Image 1 (tube, rainbow, N blue to C red):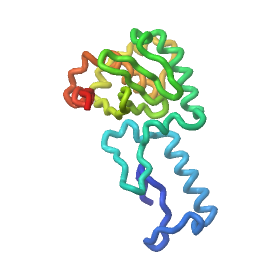
Image 2: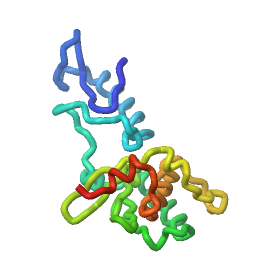
Image 3: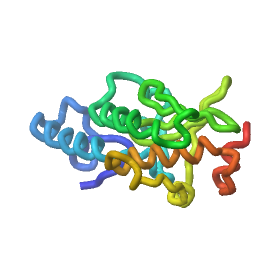
Image 4: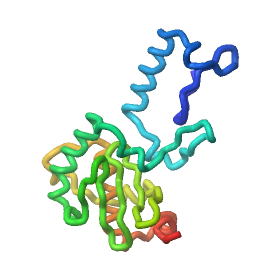
Length: 182
């Protein structure tokens, strides 16, 4: 079995086949595995991920707001709404649909509540940002003072919000270069 983070395709004898040629039981089992795989992970934090070409689906920032909020996002919204008021960045953050919008000194940003993807939002464009893990690891959330335990992704959303709320303090060159307007 080969697993990737871009597309699901079916093959028979090294030839790609149409979906209607896939036996129902095989399709059901594969889609169950895909659902399990995608419900517990995301490519949003994978700095090495990229779309695999014209047949790929890629990540489109605006599409993250489409559709109903999943149970995971609903839970994350609840956690963020309980925790955020206890933080020093609360006045610079607000929830907009499935995003946490953060007002920094240099710009406005959105952090996707589902996977933690970050975008810089301006009047003429929305641009994806990648915050290096070493920058996120340096954020002191003071989690011991929080009244709830946070899952990994919710903690990463908060860490990203902390970094972006104080964007004028960013010293990491790889992140600073992404903040320069195009």
